[in-house]
Amino acid sequence: MLIAIIAFLGGALTILSPCILPVLPFVFARTERSFAKSTLPLLIGMALTFAVIATLAAVGGGWAVRLNTYGRVFALVLLTAFGVALLSRRLADWIAKPFVALGNRLLQRTGSGGNASVLQSFVIGIATGFLWAPCAGPILGLILTGAAISGPNTQTSLLLFAYALGAMTSLAIATRAGNRLFAALKQSFGAGEWVRRGLGVAVIAAVVAISLGLDTGLLTQLSLSSTNRLEQSLLAKLNPESAQDGGTPGVMNGAMNGSMTSAMNGSMTNSMNGGADSNVMSNTMMGGAMMAAKASTAPVADEGELPSLDGAVTWLNSAPLTAESLRGKVVLIDFWTYSCINCLRTLPYVKNWYDKYKDHGLVVIGVHAPEFAFEKDEKNVRRAVRDLGVTYPVALDNNYVIWKAFGNRYWPAHYFIDANGRIRGHHFGEGNYDESEQLIRKLLEEANVKNLPTITQAVPTKGIEMAADDSSVGSPETYVGYERAENFSSSIPFARDQAAVYTAPKTLQLNQWALDGKWTVGGEQAIANETHSKIIYHFHARDLHLVLGPAVDDKPIRFRVTIDGAAPGDDHGSDIDKNGEGIIREQRLYQLIRQGEKTRDRTFTIEFLDAGVQAYSFTFG
Image (tube, rainbow, N blue to C red; front, side):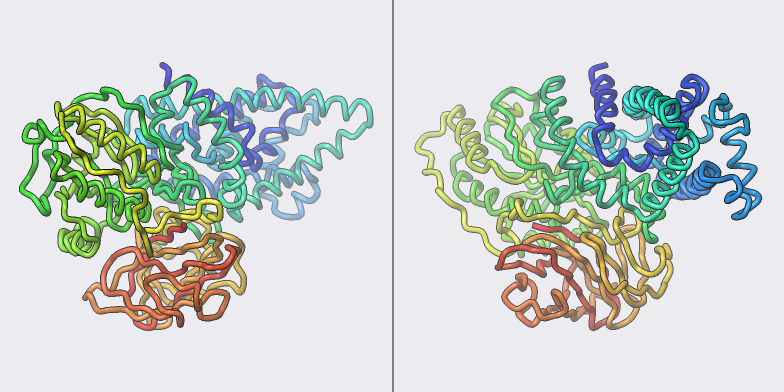
């Protein structure tokens, strides 16, 4: 019941978010009519459609994405006709006769004061529901997380409907106020016809904005900063445990370097965004639930018994460990995956704790839960463990069995277990390293361990492992595969799983990206089919990383990076030289840009001198 109330209040807060702006004209265009027969059916249709489509997007797979794509096309056509009819029936007749009948039926020729049909309003509400994709802030992120992990169920649909009902309530209040305003304008100035035409312009402008992807680009960025604090505060007051979970599910890389790329926006929008297709939550339907939150450590408490560690497909650096065999030891469980930049930046601290306290009773276990398919390959993980200098036990949790046993939702996630096998604390995301080490020491002291080593004042980091410059990150984690791609701006839409020639535009707006050359775009990656294929990204951050892999035959791929059309020089990352040249030999995250000067908007270009490269995702720091 509590989570339903939180979902309702979270939906109500969407009225304060810029993400609501594109659908407001569709709602306000009917405020001059009977609320019960016009606005209310519209809002009900919007809420029901949102709940159904959101549920399908979270758990339904590719067929749900296609359904949503067709629904959005229908909605855009329908609402365009509605807007044209508001502007002028003569203009509507001139544009296309089929749209005239549709638009006029939606308006009913009884005049501006006539009562609209309940069914007609409900249909417009359905169309609006296809187009409305609220920004995935903390509350919606929690709902989608549960949907991704637990699969389709009645609770998920009810929570999504509660969220939509909250938005419907706040919109209803706003439209009641709008009704009075429009009535006053008509009575005072005789401006009824001009108000009607103005609403028509607003409806068409909203359709254009959604078609161009502004609802998931600029407005999303504005919304994340405008409502997340309110939602997080609400969570803290109504459900302190969730607030302590470290973070704001659904907030993207600019704030948290998260793995969840605004799942709601991804799953319900972008089908009209310059060709960027609708996104689902990931290749395994788990990626949307796997996030990296900013630092938060829960207080020392008893959070339950250490779950079973059964289910790993194999163990590295150790024989399989069990919860029973670990009794008497203090245990740190670290959920990670080797191409996750947040995990890599946390790794030096985890290794330091292991080296310092392993002879004093601490056991560190890295639970490797993959995001991309290549991270399930034992050979790849073994190589990464070796190259990263990880010597403690690593469990390959390819089927997310241990992940689910912990009820985990984040990368990286640290769970601290005492010698009695009880979970005494957790930490999600980067940071709070001093507090985490103090908790380790406290648990060791409780186990009667004496003469603990002194705390290291600073753990050296370099290259990829260096902490992000959060104050300068203005670009979100961006996926290249069509399932979760956003802000794609090449000449044509994605040709799913088929080779196609893409052309990048001459200029890109901030956080837009494009392919250039012949590519085959799959669900989670894009493969270059010819030499000199390129990826271009207009970004704002100190660091730019890109997850890349060689050709399917493991043949190395040469590449060249430029920034603003020139060699990066001193702004080169650890995986290229000053001339921007590098080689892809294995599937992993590559650091390509680290700006030394003051961070500003830059245009990044990577040109692959050999065919066959596999590109997965951008992250920033």
